[in-house]
Amino acid sequence: MFTFKQVRQNLTGAGLGHGILELENGYIIVTERGGRILGPFRDEDETPSLNWLNPVLADSAALDLFLARNDWNLGGDRIWLAPEIHYMFRDRANPEASYLLPPEMDPGTWQLSAEGSAVLKLEQNMALGAYVTGPVNPLPREFKVSRTISSIPDPLRLFPQYNELRQEVSFAGYRQTVELSQTSEGDGLSAAWSLIQLNSGGEVYVPLVRPVQPTLYILPDGPGDTHLAFGEGYSKLKIDGKHCYKVGFNSGYLTGRVAYLNREDAQNGYLLIRSYFNNPSEEYIEEPSHLPGYRGDSAFIYNDSGELGAFGELECQGGTVEGAPGKQTATDTLLLWAYWGPLSRLYRIAQQLLQINIEVR
Image (tube, rainbow, N blue to C red; front, side, top):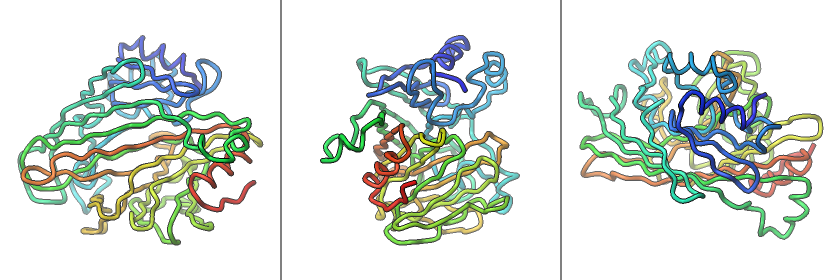
């Protein structure tokens, strides 16, 4: 376990620029390197982050080695550009061997600034080569990405049953507004891609308008497959950080909210809910490597094998942009609501905010 105070101390010691944003309860740390949002942290020195962080953040010597290798995987909440099949894979027929994360994307060259005491802003320009889908163009596409991050109030605060739901439960939340602009000419679509890394051990709940099988992007590599199950109005997937898989859900069946519920002991845990604008009329452009031309998924769940870390990921994609004369700018608003306390109350909060009938355990 490592805490807010340890992470901040090691970032400072390594000379990594960062800012602190105080939430209704707790804090987040926003880093220039990788443009990460680390946390929420519930306090300064007693409890760990509610999202997965790379253990190098707790060890100054390990962090120095990480930086010397120019590694990217700090953990937390990040923004990449989609489609992955376009910017990371060189060979569709051999995706695993041809994968390469552009350093222009991550760690990138983010610049951090503050707008008053309650808003942090990240900006960067990047040029990315495109390889697999869309028109062939030897010139890289050029983008500007701007992100503003601020605290938000509890969405339950106006519910009639607020006092009952929040009894012994704490809340923290933040808004991230992402503006993506393509600053060069050229055909082909791109979009902001949000990824939150999750501590393993819990379950993802995906509300659905009707039961539907997800799209397989990475075939499961171990027993239990995706641990996929269906409840009344939702799909549930296990995050164990041991057996790799990735699935996507078509925007036509989604509600724009996805949750992760994790236990910390027999009685207590935490709930993370991502809320985003799910728009079935949007051109969601990610494609599985084995399904050329298939599109339409706006939310994705990834479970790592342990090779990169014992984590999962809750992902969503935003509106598309393209070069002139097309739509050159897209703005997406992403909310993260975090609750912690007795599991029995967290299940009821999930029922209210996801509008699904989760069995209360």
